[in-house]
Image (cartoon, rainbow, N blue to C red; front, side, top):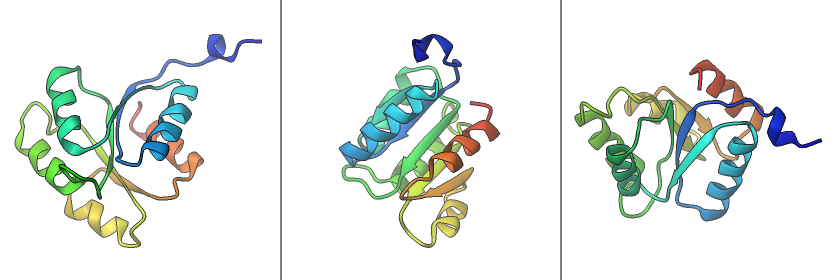
Length: 128
């Protein structure tokens, strides 16, 4: 039986992650779960995508990236009226993830390595 035919169609996500292997793994997992996933390798690419595309239901944001890191992305996002209401979930290996998420005004956080059940549960909370 073809699993794609029985897949539930869910919302659009933006995954911002500089690690190519992790970006690919997470996007594959999310697509298999029925999400439409756009990817960006840094905050600048993510901002460009958001300016030119319909808004996603959620941004999954790594903090440590080249070109434009997660803090810089979040600062630019919150200043832009068109983008400021899009919820952001921080992805980080840092043990202070909760504090970092609070300081950035993020909707939540996930610690790396990402627990799949927790990720999918969080996405359900945002009705993605």
